[in-house]
Length: 220
Image (cartoon, rainbow, N blue to C red; front, top):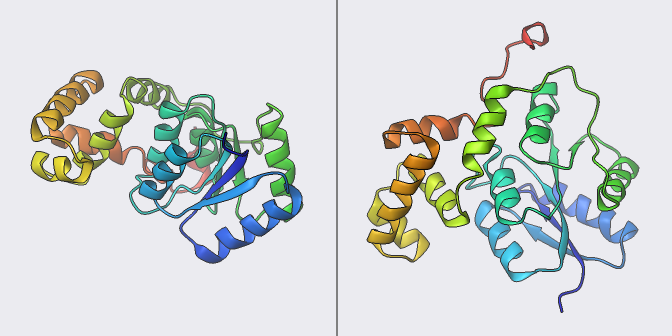
């Protein structure tokens, strides 16, 4: 049986090392795992069923803003995810909450604040700063549509957004081109899209700064 573990997913080595050090100092009973990209995040989750919490940066290679959060929430719905980001704009925090995060920590937070947030989430609470931005019906609908996708369909979706052809996606995923075609058909149907271009536009809406207002006065 896998030991209990916490996973730190961030592509900045120095920051990731600092967070890992804080966690090891405060949560000695837990193994601390690391990931620096979407692919290594997926691999760590698949290899370590004992993971009890994920600390997730929004900007890693292979991700489109909130795509990694939505993927983890869809594939591992019982696993709490805390977004940790240098972008603490109210709309970013609100979108993280609406897309299923259990908490949000600014990268400017102190070690004590980080450990307090982790402890609270592991006890079943949610931890978010007070926010000026309101919830978005558009984001709620987007999250609901994406929640219909299976993990393999979600991976295919991200490859589509990167402009890969079916043959290239098949090579990346280690499946047949026919399987990819089946995934693409299902994706278009579930998301209500009629073309790959529409899919790419939808995924762009997941970018952390997608639709960001230019100043606080423009917040809803």
